Every structure is written in structure tokens, then in C-alpha cells.
Length: 394
Image 1: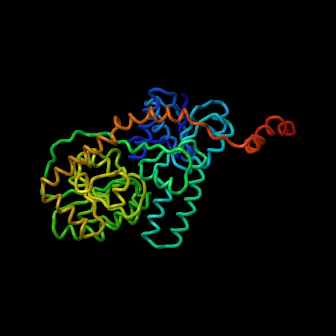
Image 2: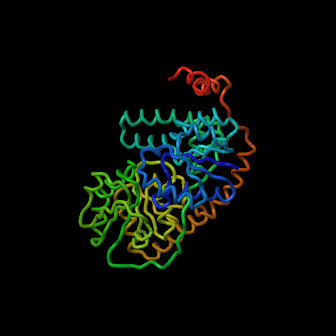
Image 3: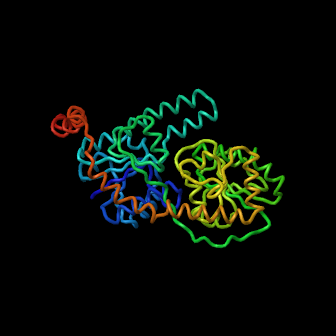
């Protein structure tokens, strides 16, 4: 099959777990199918960065397309078009239905955006946050309704969409993590905490402000020798201001493995959000125990206390960190169970087993189409230009 993948940016496998998931999904598809990639925002990406990321995709056997999306659809035929994120599909889905009515359309939700925004609105209580969440909900559900298949990262996200009335087919492709060998942990006299995330993402900014202001002072009372490293791209001024003798705002790093393997505990004190949190799976795949919140653990299906520690108040969160640091048996129990959980469900091999059945089911489904009048209306400007307007120029 010929598959076209469309996203807002050229994915780079070293940047984030979400991009790793999409890159890995495309690389798995490229083994058996002809896969092309188109960037929604290619004009705003620096040429050097675009060329670097494009080269990484080509190494995976994926063709990177340039030019306008309409021209691409007019010159090349595709059996399947996969959009990453609803807002990318919102811009281009009608063009696919217009120019390639036989192509099946998949929209990868990545996370259910309005669910994440609703959780923020519950936290802030602001009417503006509530209204924004409901506006996004209307746009997001409209796009999913037009798709032949919607991908979610968890069964929980699927249930959310069904509860909102989505009739389109849904399948689950979870986050995908490279597993690292579960080696013996090296202890030192100083507790090393780590948080990884992009600070373009509001939940991560809030999580670090909350932790440093409300949880860290409680941990410090019990464990005086400690350091928190805040790792990830685009730290905001609010995040930079958290830097201190015991808080290191690292910022962007080309790879996170070195930082994870030199840490003791990964924290994810998220107070709002959606989807499966890549930072948690990534830490577990490196053999780190994780302390998070109910929001952070959402969608994984963890057994709390066995695979992960989950606490939602500052004191309880601090107590969980102390318990892992002081009790070596608990530490080993949680980190080994977490590693096994991710390996069994979120490793490349585990997700690979989902791909072929998914595409077999998709092939058996009927493709949604625009009404003949809507399609003719969309085609009219092109044919008017091609056969009529050019005659009156010059």
C-alpha cells in the first residue's frame, strides 16, 4: 500500500516520546509499505533543521515530500493518509476527500485535546478555560467524525470519545519506547530527581512550579542532600526562575538516556493533562521508579504501589519520594515492575504486533466520502483556473 503521513512538523526521533512514537510507527509501516511524509509547517522550519530531520526519515525508508499539499495529492495516489493531530487533519482532510476519494483517512489523536483542556479548566475554575475546552471539543470531534479511523493512545481515551458520541471506528496504538537493559542501580549520597518534558506544554510548566514551590521544601526537610534536574526544550521564564542550588534547569538535550541513567527517581507531578504521558514510560523503560499523580498515571492501567507510586497532595508526594529513597526493597520492587510493564505493553515489539491487524481491519471498512456536490464545489476553482481563467491573462 502507498501511505501518506502528515504532521505539523518533521518528526525527529531524539526529541520526544510523542515523536518517537510517530517515527517508530512510520518505520514499522515502511517495512511493508511505501510511506511518504508531508510537513504541515515546512515553510517555517529552518532549512538546516528540516534537512536533518528529513534525513532521519529517509534512513527509515520514508520519502519526504515538499511543495503544496494539493499538488502532492494531484500527482501521487495514496491508499491511506494518516494525520497526526486533529488540527492538522482539520486543515487538509477535505483536500484528501476531494482529490483522492478512495483513500482511507486515519487521524491519530495523540491525546484527546479537549479532555486535557477540561482537566485544566477544573483545576483553574476559570470560565475562559472551560469555554476554550468546549470550543476545541467541537472542532476536534468534527474532525474525528470525518475520519475512517481514529487512533488513540489508550482505551481510556477511546472511552472518552465514545462517551462524546463519536461513531467513527477507533483503534489503540499506545506510546512506543525503546527499552534499555535493567542494570543494577548505582547509589550515591545525594538524591537525584529528574523531570523531562517540553515547556511549550502548559501542564509541564505548571507541574514544575507546583513541585518546586509546594513539594520540594517538604522533601528537603527529610532529605537535605538532593538535586532536581528539569530537562527538556523551551523552558519558559517561569521555569528558568526555578533554578537554585538544588534545582538545575538543564533545558534541551540531544538525548535523555545519560540523564535518566544518572538519576534515582523520575517525578511527574502533573495536575492536568491528557493521553499517556511519555515521560513516565520513558523513565520506566530506563529502569527508574516513578512518582506521579492520578493525572500522570491516567491511561496506563498501572497497579498503583506495584508499578508506580501515585499521590495527589504535596505531603503524600514528598512521602512517596522519601519511601523510595529510604527503602531499597521498595525501590527495586517498583522499578522492576515498572520496567516489565512498559516492556510488555509499550516496547517496539509489543506495538509491532498491533500494526498488521489494524490495517487488515481498516482495509475491510468502507471509506467515507464527500457528497458529490461538496466535492464538485471543491474541484471547481482548480478546473476554472485550468480551463478558463488562464485564457484571460496576459
